[in-house]
Length: 490
Ligand code: SF4
Ligand code: SF4
Image 1 (cartoon, helix red, strand yellow):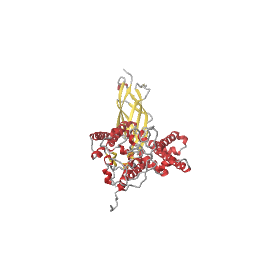
Image 2 (tube, protein in one colour):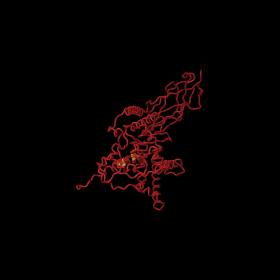
Image 3 (tube, helix red, strand yellow):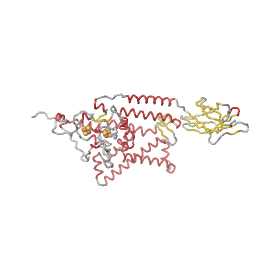
Image 4 (cartoon, protein in one colour):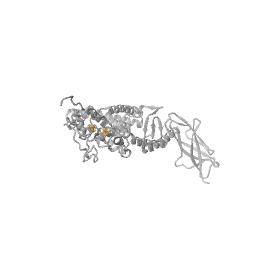
């Protein structure tokens, strides 16, 4: 029969050649071993193919923003304080310009709880959106190191061929260049991390001073660089599979309403390759779904899994398989979204995201914690003082018959300005002497000083006498300290 030629894409398959260097994989036992290891436990190197598509474009733009924040972060200040500083050595922490000291441990504990609960809620509702879009490991691996690799060694098939080829000048040059660039980026990233710990000024000092003056700092610089080099050059996706606990939490947090990267098996199965002679209707009649078994979703996956087997621990929700499959669907003229963001209920029953009792419960806890944290930060004192009796001392009797006790005073100034502090003995009557004269606490510092308190015997009780000390700043009482005065027993 003549007539117009059949233009349906299902009957005009893509010209794209299958990747001859990809070994056929038996996915039927995918639950018995991870995709990056063979049955004997040997590492299977993953060569993900380049991907293109809208999700990849949005992720790229978002990654540029995150990388900019990451690299610019140490130089951004809020009211003179860094945006973020985690100085474990000096036990000083700055978040969004707010300084937190070890004395703020309770605030820190509530903030950690809040962070954990937000992760629970977020993961329950949206799966591992964080991993695919914002995790530094994924951003650095897929948007920086992987791109350097593509630039120097080409797409996955070229990389396989290069690795299989005998050593020659071209291969050596490309491999050396890649490792040098990888190490340089790792060194840069290590320095950025270090500047979030000690601040960029001390880091700059380490760089410009003679090496002998900062051996510890240099050791950390090198250590961080080697750590990141090891992760991004060799360890790669295994950091997500073996080390990161978040992926393992998935099985606890996800339920049938969580949004995940999912293959619509109802639409896709039974999968089967396109055949030239097969008409669209014939394909449907033969029981085939939209999946044309092209394996593009597998070949782009950076963790080497087949999403058609369902949600798996290794999946970092990077959306590469969504883009790859959408490209195939477009070519064959089927609707996009065979692999998409969806919940199990969404695929099985066509349900939209539902607010489950679990989600409501987590949200209530989150709101309560956020309120507590907000109150704690809002009412947090700028100055915090503690007083303890000096160790190894008891009491002394003066020539005039008065008794004295020695104390150690610690004052933390959490502000960015110098604070003059005054101490007054409020109860009982007596004298208080600050050793070394006036108390002036430098900004963001801890001041330690000694105090001598003298009481006349009439003001003392037998054994210990409770003391109340008032801490004043700018003429305003900011804290009352309680301690004990030790004297003889009657
Ligand atoms: S890319 Fe899409 S069509 Fe191709 S195998 Fe994967 S799910 Fe099937
Ligand atoms: S299955 Fe898809 S979303 Fe998950 S890691 Fe692989 S490519 Fe990324």
